[in-house]
Amino acid sequence: MTRAFCQRLRDDKRGVTAVEFGLIAPVLLVSMMGVFDLGYNMYTSSVLNGAIQKAARDSTIEGAQSRESTLDAKVTEMVNVVAPGATTAFKRTSYTTFSDVNQPEDFDDVNNNGACDNGEPFEDANGNGSWDPNRGSSGFGGARDAVMYEVTVTYPRAFPIANLIGQSNDMTLVVRTVLRNQPYGPQAERTAIGSCA
Image (cartoon, rainbow, N blue to C red):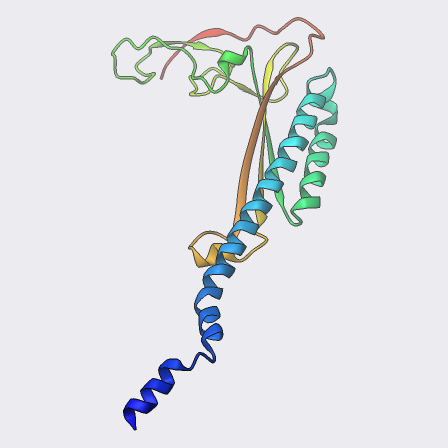
């Protein structure tokens, strides 16, 4: 009887599909949500890049400082269409040339310790009176300045996949672009010599 029962059980194929589906479905669903989440984030990034490029171009013309809030509001509006509830933070940093972007101010490292200290002379490129690891000045800059426009966007993820793999429910994108201001006047001279503290 046991042998006949085992034979019948082995030959019975009813319910196999349900068992296979039960084993495969969780992996398939998690993978699909991951792909959808990735696609959504890539699309949001693309929309943000386009909005920033447009706002940055509009920021390079004379008098753009007076329209700063309007330019930033347009970027926020475009992002909120794709990612409702997103928060945006804006930052503009101006440089004399493109090669100055994200570069530290030059200094003479007299004691060869790699730090600007002990009264070592430095070139105060941004005119704030102290040595900085970034030679840029905050704001729109002047004529012919290279301006880095940076937008940080934080928005809730569209799919709950992040909790399954231990990530945050919020996605943060940082997008930057650098454009030169229009030549509407002479470029301001900002360089001075200072002493490191």
